[in-house]
Image (cartoon, rainbow, N blue to C red; front, top):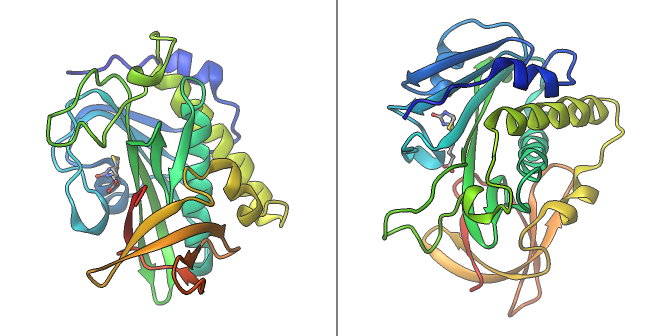
Length: 258
Ligand code: BTN
């Protein structure tokens, strides 16, 4: 299913100076992240596509879409290695702000998008490095927008904006523009030390102070999510020992509500 992306609607809502001013719109691509990683596009360029044939998820998983999603990636440079995790969180805040035009979106650390306790989108930050510093950073998101149903095996944990919005006249262009507006503003503030991601987390988290199950090295542990620290690491409290731990590995997933 190809989506007729309305550029003028997108630009009417885009308030950024740089991010998303260059936008490349495709019908079908392998992976929007792949294209930005392999080819040279100017800083802040965005690629969006109706659909991907080789969409990538986190931890080596595939990201499969049926053409109902907003799929986009953006390329950045100039972020140091220690800014990658905070930027990943900022990008998650921004996607939530975009979706909030239509539905109440929250985050599952680090940046899965949750609506009413189900996953409505995923995000993937990738970087190429020169030495120890990233030379190119690509952030991509796949957001379930128009999906009216999901395959039976994932319907208990997957949802879409359409299924959660009273307004059914949903515009991908407006979600993308609002996401990029928010991303540029937050990133500028972060670079100027005017944005504390740890203080903002509670506004965006789907599970703050709630019981979550964390999977570490094949072991499942009951924890309470307490927040994130300024590095973007998840702070959790062990339910039995009350011990506080910071979690930073991308390999850790958690399922919710025990
Ligand atoms: C996840 O939940 O595991 C992350 C999914 C990320 C999917 C997006 S869709 C746009 C961009 N291109 C990709 O190949 N992956 C990301």
